[in-house]
Length: 94
Length: 231
Image 1: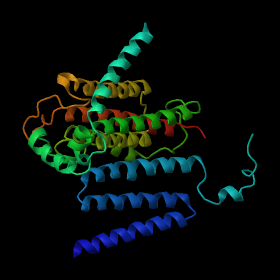
Image 2: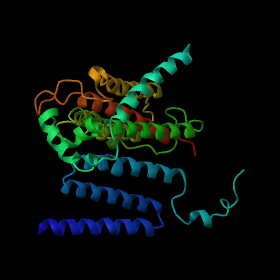
Image 3: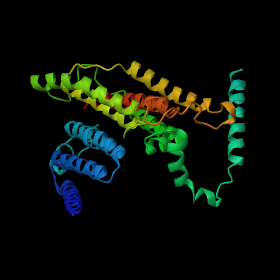
């Protein structure tokens, strides 16, 4: 019974984080939300007795993907609608 | 002369490929029914491998693993070729701000431990959960930590490419050794050993160590290239 409650809670957390990542205009928060999805997915894999996949998901999903997205945001724009507000960016450079 | 050698190698490979695939009888019902029971029973009785997933991934489906490693290599090399021209010199990147003393000291402490964990995971791939891919990504995470903490942390692309190439070559050579004694590609030709011992499972240990080195080198190179990209 406690496992069912735990799994339902984790699934709801995943869906909530996914919806938050789509709705959020600040891309930094959206990337952290996708990291939360991977973290919860790691716990889910471990509960479902797949520790191999859990290790992979922890290393790639939580660490590497999040960091790569963070670097991309730092090199480009942080807010989703910033591109259209900024007049300079509307004309293609060169 | 070189063309002749290439043709000769291709002919030998083609002969063995034809020999294997002509005796397979693809599409017959025994491909659908009994495979899972075969895997589960053979893993413990013949191979003496404690981790069933590892025995399937490396031994029964070793060719698929080679394909996965090749796909990862292609992705990383494509990314490197796109980003190669517009990267900073080593130690002069402006992507990230300087980190504090606490982060630097802490990551220096954590780095050897992460290396050890990654090496443990891919050396003990046939005994405990994990394997080459997992251990390689853990090691790449350690390098990522050092690259984030220290602005002038350098990783030699030459060493990375040599490690990556040699690991791939050894994987294929171990696979070719399976042809000895009339076997197939990636056939397990080494003695199986005792269950739950470190030296058990035949070629699984060698192949997973090589996969671990290959994945670690590829992902470290990927992170290094991205971190040194110009705006």
